[in-house]
Image (cartoon, rainbow, N blue to C red; front, side):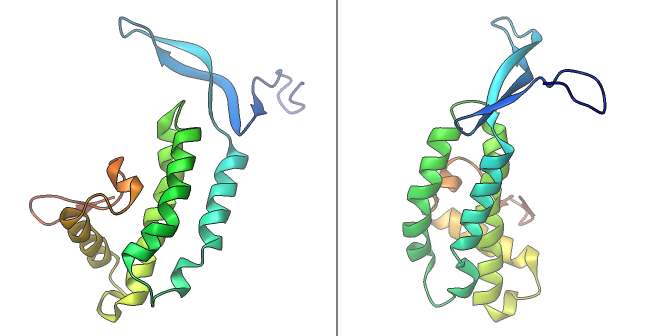
Length: 154
């Protein structure tokens, strides 16, 4: 198929939720080269985002984090196990949406955190420090991380 604007052939295709296209890879001795590799497709990313929104997590402020994790973890684990086989960093970008929705949920549940995103991230960081295995994406190293000086990065 030819790209009409540029006149170049289209060098990617989607198959089973993956986009196959030229990507940078590394050989056994660490030298970079271009290879035709799969990663999660844009269509699959959009579907993940739509699914996260459909959970309506923000409306359910009456439930606990453990109840949320019981609903969320099996789905997130499945996404990671399927799409994380190749080019994991692309999957991480999609799974960060789960963390963003958790932060919004915390801001809605606790009034004192309502207008403070940084404090909501710190709250989730403290919860993560106490019990790091509540959410599957936390075990992967994604989510609010608390540094020694109390500042947060996401």
